[in-house]
Amino acid sequence: MMVLGALLYLVTFVCSIVILIAAFKESVGQGFLCLCIPLYILYFAFAKFEHDKKTLILGVWLGSGVVGAALYGIGIGSALSDL
Amino acid sequence: MARAFGGEGPARLEAVLFSRHSIGLAQLILALSVVLPPKGLGITVCWLQAISGLPCPGCGLTRSVTSLTHGHLESALRYHPFGILVWLLAVILASWPLWGQQLRRRCFDWLRRYEQLSWRSYLAAVYSFVAFGTGRALLLALERID
Image 1 (tube, rainbow over the protein chains, first blue to last red):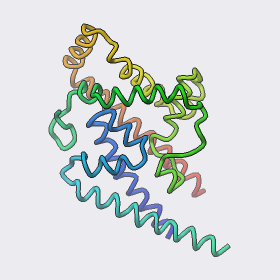
Image 2 (cartoon, each protein chain N blue to C red; image 1 turned 120 degrees about the horizontal axis):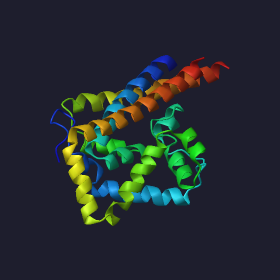
Image 3 (tube, chains in turn purple, cyan; image 1 turned 30 degrees about the horizontal axis):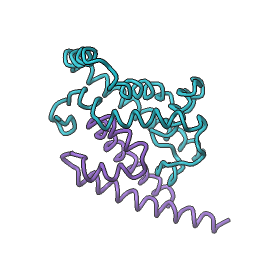
């Protein structure tokens, strides 16, 4: 569970990097806003991010993030209950 | 502004760097770096670190910039090596409205003359920053697995 969660985290991380690089290409300010302000990257991704495969990237990014967090949480929970 | 992402060709670096938002943000960053303690507030605003415990590419940047403003070069490098670059960029952008008309025009002329070179240098800096952040996160993740 935890390994799968970690793998999904990796996918989320890669998608975040793609969006972050796009933000820096839009403007240096947008890039730093995505880095420094929590959840600004969400706003940028939906409102300003432009890519041929935007839907796919956003879908994978959010989907793997949510499922990864859930699996990781379940994994940690079951590991703690085993102790 | 021409968008670089999606194959429309490189955007002009002057538009990417010297937008009103970027200048305002640079001024805010420098002002905060004077007020904030160099060691940080002890809280994280990074959602990636909050969820996974791993640092994102920008983690440590605020402390690095704050340390530089307070004159602590060594700790700035320890927190984030790209802090120096960000600090220099923030100083240039924050002081941009104070630059004389002639100096600004000369700077824009230079950026236009060497557009490809300056754009590639900017992209190289962005990719190196991201590569550093990714490498650091992966190393920490591997350390935890061990």
